[in-house]
Length: 343
Image 1 (cartoon, rainbow, N blue to C red):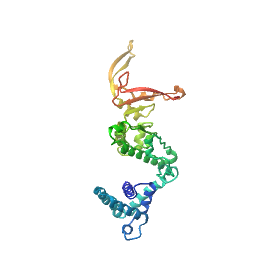
Image 2 (image 1 turned 90 degrees about the horizontal axis):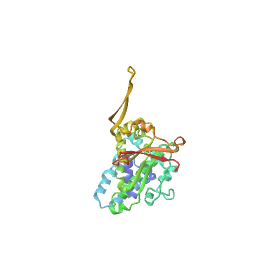
Image 3 (image 1 turned 30 degrees about the horizontal axis):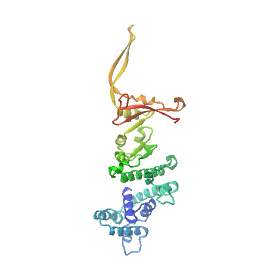
Image 4 (image 1 turned 120 degrees about the vertical axis):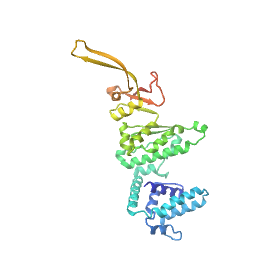
């Protein structure tokens, strides 16, 4: 389906200079699906071909106005060849499955609230991703329990567009212009549902675009469960590594506590007290103190952090870690902070 989407977008951008889900849907359902249909559609002298032929011929006309030979070659060798030869000559069964996957997704995105959010028509929607550069706060409130996969996909699309326009608009600006850029932010609750490989790439240069990114999730295991690849641990670890500041609140997930937080903060020589009991002797017991190499934050510590509410006087605790920082007064690479829920 990825190849279908790429060539659909390329054809529309070349032909009309814009892309909408409605136009993508129309291109796919009207594209020639057999060699006979293709011969009619791509025969300039034949009146048949309908909507798709109109889009294609307009793209050819635009190509005639372009002087960049690389752009022309890319269109001819990839986009044009795909629609003229590869797509109509595909095995009907897998092609039908690919089309069905795309049209099912597009159909859901073209209905109700989702359509208004993703629409490029100012009569339908009053905001766009570029609104963030004007100091506006764009909120997408599409509860996944209500909107299911369609709501998830709509928010993923918007997040990806956000990241793309930020990189395009800001990464290559001169240094003096970057200094005057308006800071922007990306805030994602239940982030395990929206994590993709594009997040890793975006976060590697987010600082240079003055973008603050906040990803909230209950625990490390959530990321592993929802990334959905055979390299999920490597993907999650790579993503978390590019986030500079991390807040860990009270929780009991053993993978987060044992395998991630304790190892992230690391080990040091710490004093540990031990007691030896000898019931066969009157001396009773003896205590010794020794210095051993152990985790600075033991896994059970996270389970003991205050989690707010009346029982904790509305106080929430968190362990904060930031790469390359030693926190005062102990010069440790982590610190314990508190938040008042009443503020």
